[in-house]
Length: 393
Image 1 (cartoon, helix red, strand yellow):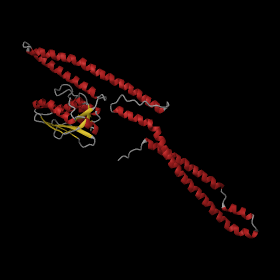
Image 2 (cartoon, helix red, strand yellow):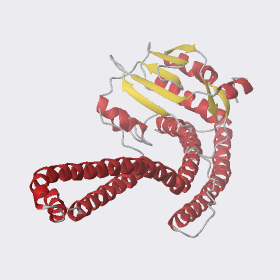
Image 3 (cartoon, helix red, strand yellow):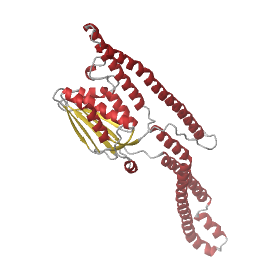
Image 4 (spheres, helix red, strand yellow):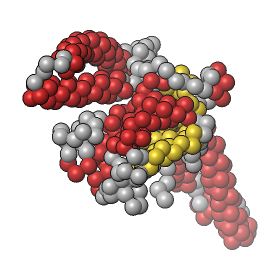
C-alpha cells in the first residue's frame, strides 16, 4: 500500500526545521572547537603554577595538579556541549513551530485558490478568487485564474444561448416536415410507391428529431452550471418504467422495478432522462421473452445512492463495454443503420452522471446483457428535509 505523501505545509515546515537543525549543529560544533582550542590543558597550567612555588613544593604539585586541571577542563567542555545541545533542541522546536505558522500564512492564498477551483469544478463558474495584496507571484496566479474563469463563463453562456437558439431553429423545420408528411399520408388517393416514400421520409424525420433531442440533451448535460433540487432516484426510475411500459410490452420484454428511496440533488429532468435512457437501452438491446430489472437504493458505498439497470440480451465482451459510452457507438460496430436508437443513450447517461458529481459503470451480465450501475452523491440531511422527494417533472 502506497503511503500518503505529506502536505506541502508539512514539507515546508520540515525543510525549515531541518535547515535550522543543520546550521545550529554546525554552530555548536564550531563553538565547541573554539572553546576547546583556547582552553589550556592541565600540564600548561600546572607548569605556570609550579614556577611560583618553592622548590620543596614544586614536585608534589607537578604530580597532582595536571590531573585535577584536566578533569576540570573536561567537565567544563562537557557542560558546554550538553547545554548547547539543550539550547539547540529548544531552538529547533521553536523554529519548527514558527515554520509551521509561517508556512500556513504563506500558503493561505493557495488554499483559497484551491477551494475556489473545487467550487468551480462542481459547476459554479461564477466564482472568483479576488485575492487582495501586493502584486507578488500568488496575486498574479489568482488574477490569471480569475481571468480564465471569466473567459470560461462567457464561453458557457454563449454555449447555452447557442443551444437554445439551435433548439428552436432546428426543431421548427423538422416539426413542419413531420406535419406535411403526416398530412400527405392521410390522403386517400396517394399512390402506393409515394406512400412508401412518405413513410420512409417520416421515419427518417423522426430519427432526425430523436438525434437532435439527444444532442441537445448531451450538450445540456455537459454544462456543469445546473440548478440542483432534491430528487429521489426511485421517482426517476418509476417515471422511466411508466414511459417505457408500452414499448416493453410490444418488444416482449418484462419490466421489474424495485424502487427503494435514493435521495440525491440535481436537475430532475436530466436525472429522469438518465433513467429513461437506461431502461430504453435495456429494452431495445434485448430479445423477446427477456427482462429488464431496475433497482434504486443507498448501495454499498457510503455517501452515495445507486440506480442499477440489469437486462438480458446478446453477450457483450468486456473489452467492448467502454466503447458503448461513446457517442454514436453501438455493439458490433453498428453506427447508423439501426432502428434501436441513435447511439447517444449511454453517452447522455455518463454525461449526466458526471455533471451531478457521480459516475456510471457497466459490466457484462453472465449469459448475455448488461448491468449498468449509476452512483450519485447522497443528499444531505438538510436537502432531504427540504425536498418532497419527488423530482418528477
